[in-house]
Image (tube, rainbow, N blue to C red; front, side, top):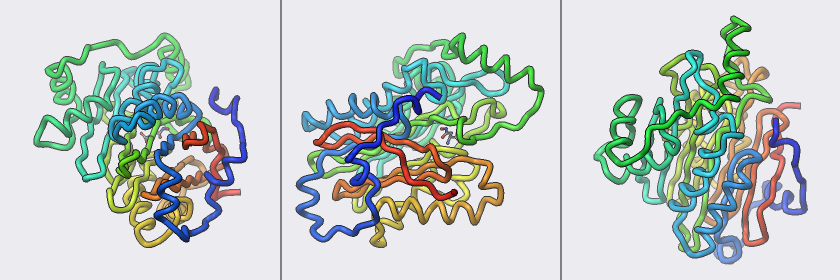
Length: 321
Ligand code: SD4
């Protein structure tokens, strides 16, 4: 896949990989590490750059994560998010997204069709309705009422890939080392608030109506303003079994670094998913001191980290040999 073509391992990775060190002086660390934004996969770099514009002008983490992931949603080259996303097995592009703020407000959409920016619809579900999630036709109806434009999100490239898949006549959608790309993004702003967003077209060639982990608060995304935030990418069916993002935040609350928390969650995930060797899952996490961490189940999970020192792509450590 394209994103692996320009992997850079830099000096920053030793910071990003965290090496499990606990913070001696959290308050000083906080001073030096705000703002910060971290996002999954190679396309997280472009998303981070957009988020950084918001953060560096003292914008909120919530605005930053929404602005950031919209870049991937609009990019036809990113085939697991928004426009250009691979369709379900019936050829329909159905989108899942969630957003969460430091004060625990959250919004989500699932199985939403024809709308390029599901993350912005999720934010409006949070801000303008008494609910946290809308799905399918109801989510579309709400989006149209809010002024979003109905569009065809199936690009010729994604349609061709689906037609090729149809010809195989097998039904075993998987998320292995190559089939994934969901963007999850976490940010800490200059005011010390965290927020997160996660948006995806989900598992390629899924059954129509299938919803993954990404829009499920606690599974694909979780934010706690007292602790930090976490988000997930990979096979949703495996991630929901351990409510992974909530678990990671709770592990950080208990004193683990973001990297340790991501690793421990993956250890739990393999206990609960006997077929773990066939799938890929990746987690990223951020705490209130601006410390970040990530872990992949298998080799190849990359993430983008933007600190005041710059925007870098990092390969996460991985659990399986
Ligand atoms: C899902 N977690 O729908 C998503 C897919 C994903 O990168 O992460 N793709 O299960």
